[in-house]
Length: 102
Image (cartoon, rainbow, N blue to C red; front, side, top):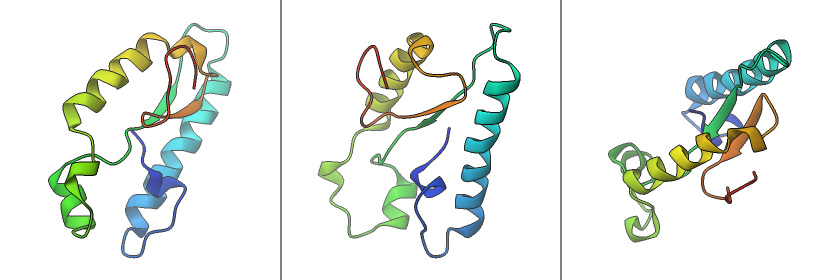
């Protein structure tokens, strides 16, 4: 599980963002190293959800505009079932993913 903090700079989120960026890069490396073995690596950014972490980080956000974690989890399950449509080592965003492609 990655985060938009891997690709966006947020004040006071330095260690978190750097670790997520490293995870994305590790996914790309492992995808290349494991190509042809049948092992697939995909990192997933679940997007903004109605969680306590989000409320703490962005108290001004309107929670009615955020997805419930259960909805995102179900979408991620569908994404993983179609992971072969994503390049090995790829990064996908749950908020923009459509069935059959990234």
